[in-house]
Length: 125
Image (cartoon, rainbow, N blue to C red; front, side, top):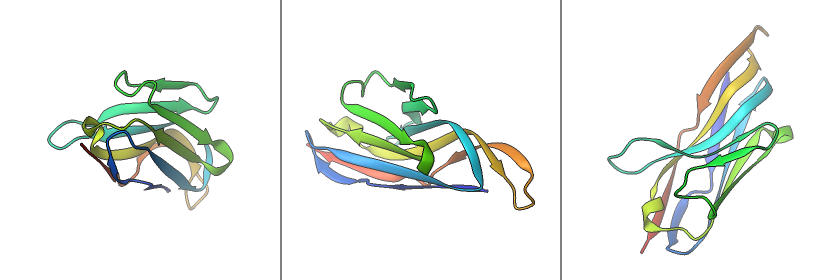
């Protein structure tokens, strides 16, 4: 199977910066899309940013110009650099890997969609 492990969340003052990382591990052949989603308290999970294997990116309007997503395909790792943070950015941030080509323990080919466990980002005013 495939596991995603996130790191880099925490508490920061408004206007500050944080960098999230998410590393995918397992018998991975390739990952088409990697992205970040967030879920504020009492609200639904929404897309923050996404990047494909070729480096094409897409951002939610609310973070465009402040957040930057990037990835290292050789390390199966995606990053989210968050600048000029606002209190409304407070949420649990989840990493997603979509259309993952991987091998089972019996070395059977599979495609799957995987999520990380989430990391808390809190922005104080």
